[in-house]
Length: 626
Image (tube, rainbow, N blue to C red; front, side, top):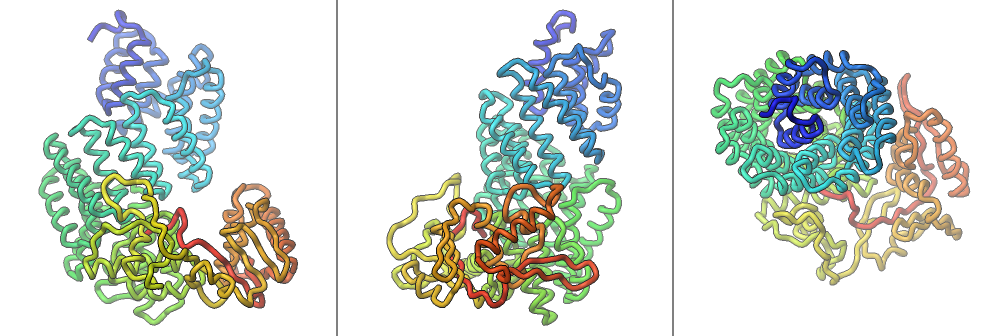
């Protein structure tokens, strides 16, 4: 390597950036430290890159010390180096839970980038949006996080075709998974895989993450293929604990596919590969997954043993992601369920079912709660639990395990007054029936059209499941044109699936009709277009879908879009929105204000029981998916 005095700092910075794109943060640390040891001063370009490399290699304490030693607002630094410094400080503040400091640093980074030369700083802009998304996620401000991710994706598209594209796509995939968007994550991971060198560590990581994303949305064969590829690459590279982790990825896919024996075999391989390697976190995850698989098989003594091992390992870990902790809760409840202790399982689970509501593992936890409640004769609690799982699955595309064991729950969900719950339940039942009948996965994609027989078989319901087409097909295949289009009609009594031609008959007697196909609302003989009331349409739809329970203030704000519950005028906006809905319906008594039972019960707004309504919706939605 030429001496630091013989090579320009700009050239060194470019080379370091290319190394960072190939996961060489450890080398970057050692090289910059060796350079700085023979220099009298620290160059800003090297300092900010060393700061990032410290963070990426997990040397957070060193990163904190270096960040504290650098000037707070160095006037002599270039705008891009200033932005990099502020972004790294924001990352550290986010890790430390100092959200106010992180937000201040991000504002400083944004101002620095505004002063940069036009067209420069795309990488820094990307890092700014990614860091913003991570902060918003930590603060549980999901709409803001989603907006930051969209901006990051927009900037990523403008990056030149280079080594950066693969790690950028991986980062976007990780963020998408954390935001419970596995379909977007799969696309990003596939993009990373297409750009990563074949049989490289980057390709191994892309295969593994793509396998988990695909397995979580029901594309089990593809997920299994990519997990196997990750294992093969790890074996070639001699990747140590990463080789064991690739076997764990396969176990995760097999659990999602309801193949518990396959999961156990993969975990056995992982434990052999791991040997004496010291990796407490991976051992903890393997213990959790093995306990779950054993519980699925009804091997309760072994499941209890491995659950105890996982809990002991958890106690020794200082920091665990919230999703991993939720996974342990779900596994504990699943083990107790398998042991025939539904009451104990419910006691363990009920405190956690509302935490991380969008996470895959929370859907599985709700199904455990539902099955245990049903076993104890509490149909109301079972219905609430399965509806929570169905709404999460429909919204995000999750396919939860234990489908055969949950069949009674999905049958119960068919009686829901929410078409999204009914749609998801139909798809889950279709998957169970298809699995039992060994139906081939090569079924047509959703068409929403009535087959010649006039009713939907399990094979037609299976066609509703996004992700059943295999390989790399991420986009929808053109739907067939034969048959008659079906729709959902929701009334106070039930959700029914009817031909579009019979909509008048299905809505007969309704004084309030909301047609989401035509974006129109009819009250008695008065028809109102909802085209210019797009904020009110989703709110009215939600009020009809949840006519029995009503909506809380937070749910009203989320349904209407715009500022969320954390906004300063949230209470005022709720009152305004409900007032507008009442005006739209032409009856102040059409929306009731009620309060949940208990000292801390929340105020809810629901449709009056006297309102005879009908809600018309398409059979399929863009979010639908088991």
